[in-house]
Length: 157
Image 1: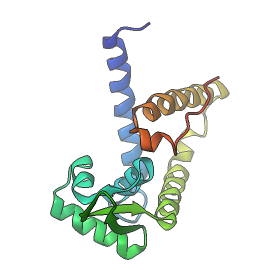
Image 2 (image 1 turned 180 degrees about the vertical axis):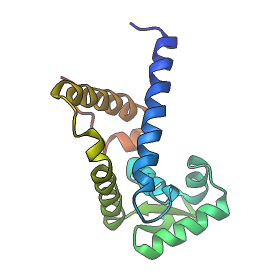
Image 3 (image 1 turned 90 degrees about the horizontal axis):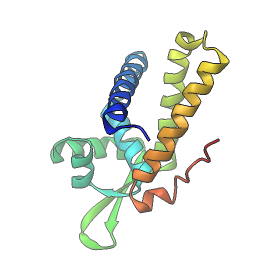
Image 4 (image 1 turned 180 degrees about the horizontal axis):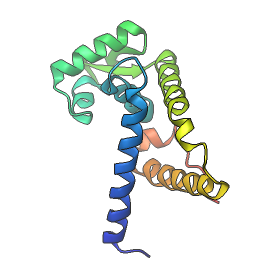
């Protein structure tokens, strides 16, 4: 079993590179802000959320999140409805159109950076797939129980 320090070092390096990859790909794709897509992705991962909880989760002010939700709703990417547990509260939920927009953005980002990875060897591709599998396994386990039901863990080889 590896030490927590060694794991922290690997995770830090991985986060650095993932952020760089995301920034590079995002900068080349026109469209909405990263926050816009972060909200859609979060709703896709964890399910319906209150505006205040969304704001806290993406580190945005409540008025800023209200504006973002309004934009998302205008595009048809989310819907707002009553919270069955508290009729005074509103829940925001991603729509099929929102999930499709997120998938299209990801495809465009992949297309943008694909030439950078054109010289990957089969071994490097397997290493990246293994890393993706490890992340899927551990990050899925970290999701709230209600989100895990819609994100079954991929079997690791």
